[in-house]
Length: 294
Image 1 (cartoon, one colour):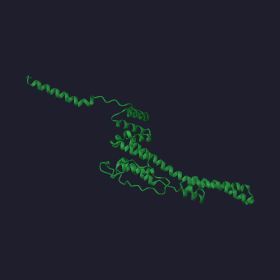
Image 2 (cartoon, helix red, strand yellow):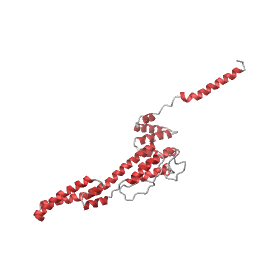
Image 3 (cartoon, one colour):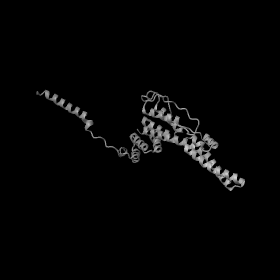
Image 4 (cartoon, rainbow, N blue to C red):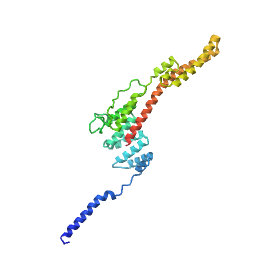
């Protein structure tokens, strides 16, 4: 090798070493150690994770977004929806939330879960869907519009004969839209028993209001319980006339049972509507919470 070629060879060798170091650096570099809050989240200790994440958040003066995101994630996983919403609405972190679409959507979902009947905050207002707002398959519906549908589903009164009109999601796209369509269909198909009609039917024939609600055995039992004292009260009056003690006592028992039968049928319709609605609402809230925590 000539003297003139040695510098070139050394330069080439040095360039190769530098290039190899740059290429291999991501593979040999050690990963940054996880924070205690992240370790707790990975272990499923969500309440402890929330405490540590909040401690990290309050101790930071710069770049609070990762700690805020982790804190709200752990609070959601721990089913602490109220504290998570208050954290996102804290004025100290308003600018952080405003710059993060993920935190904005998380805040909107929590408002829909915790306060479905209240007016949403300005950044949660439904706006016409734009291409950048809609994921592929949304069929023109933005996440905020889907969220508004779910908010209305959570606000429906189970015993109201007038239910607000909700759009039909015929073309179901992504998983969230398909789930929203399923909740919408189930809400529309929920039987809404009329408490007044149930009470009127039981007044006409004891137990008939319970049969109207699909509770055939309760209806038959109610009728049987009323027939027995009514029969013996009638026989007592037939034997001793108006002076029959048995007739008056059993007649009073029959009257109380009859009134209870009417009231029970009315109350049963109210409670049955509410129970069905509450089960659907619990499923919607859990689904929205899972979506927000992703």
